[in-house]
Amino acid sequence: MIKRTLCFSNPCYLSKKDNQLMFEPADGGEKKTIPIEDIGMLVLDHPQITLSHALLMALIECSAAILSTNAQHMPEGLMLPMTDHHAFTEKVKKQLEASEPLRKNLWQQTVTAKIQNQAALLGVVGIETENMQYWAAQVKSGDPDNYEARAAAFYWDKLFVHIEKFRRHRFGDPPNNLLNYSYAILRAVIARSLVGSGMVGFAGIHHKNKYNPYCLADDVMEPYRPFADRLVLEVLAEEENIEELTPALKRKLLTLPAVDIFIDGQNSPLMVGAQRTTASLMQCFEGVVRKIVYPELS
Image (cartoon, rainbow, N blue to C red; front, side, top):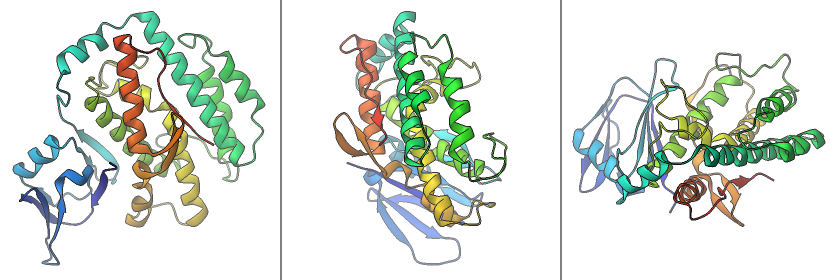
């Protein structure tokens, strides 16, 4: 079942009553209730939001991801269940014991899928991608030739060619703000799925930054990034003013977990597809299968 993504951007009090999230606006407006079991992600986007501990625990028990934003309204903190799988210890042991050749093979699959999806999105906007297809086919175990970076340089040079002097950078000019916000949402979706599949986020298959607790999420989300990029392109086609990340823009970007993707031979909401990907990754660590199930952008 697809879970709901909720964003609260005004002062309010959030509590729990009868397994419902109780929403009470600080200005005395209309109160609302939402079934907690339907919530997949909660975005807290105002410093004057108060949250009861009972609600917090209920959200965690239902495997919801809770995102907190900073003064610039960009996602800054992420809370997830610590152990969300009945065989958590056994699963984590398999993850941590994965051999280096297996990790390199998994990274090869990840980079290949990412380049193929980048090429597909470039194809949608009318860019010739024969070189990208070639690079995707050339990726070796561990990507020692760094085709990921080569493809990324070409991809970002072409994707927003209609925007003068666009340069992909975390602190760059718009639409980098839209991309950053979308990636933060995507990272939360993937991190939530990893926990649900019995894995820990800090042990990546490629990313190894000691300051990053979400290395594995950053690995697995790579082939999903073009879906976030596609959503940003759709927003750009509809909106002229993107300098400020307005509530209206955020509402459009928060639809990312529910966008339709094609994965493992069928269409699926992205949040559900992410669960298929992380479940297959866990099976790779367990030696059951050798292929990660990633979505195909078309």
